[in-house]
Length: 129
Image (cartoon, rainbow, N blue to C red; front, side, top):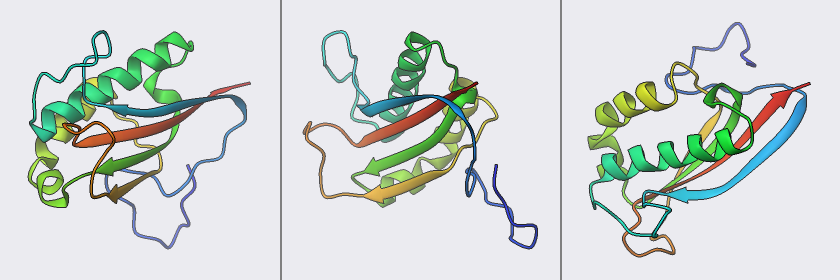
């Protein structure tokens, strides 16, 4: 992880990372059941939990783990719902991803392609050489 010594440590993410290896790029994942493309909930934190689980399933399909994540970009439809759900999102993160916090950005958007989607996350991972 990249962090200048005189910078305050980030909370819940890293400022940067440097790694070599096989790159895995995941398309934006949303909080639905990928088996039938249906939503079980409209709850922001629960959709986020599903997104994280979907990301881990894709990583496993590529022979990777959450520890290989090097970049996440979150697209959310409501800053207010995100902030109100941070504790529950943090619990899901620790359970599903673990204690690994790669560089992340969060972007608030007016909507996502799937009407019921509240969060979409693009991910990149690298399996080191």
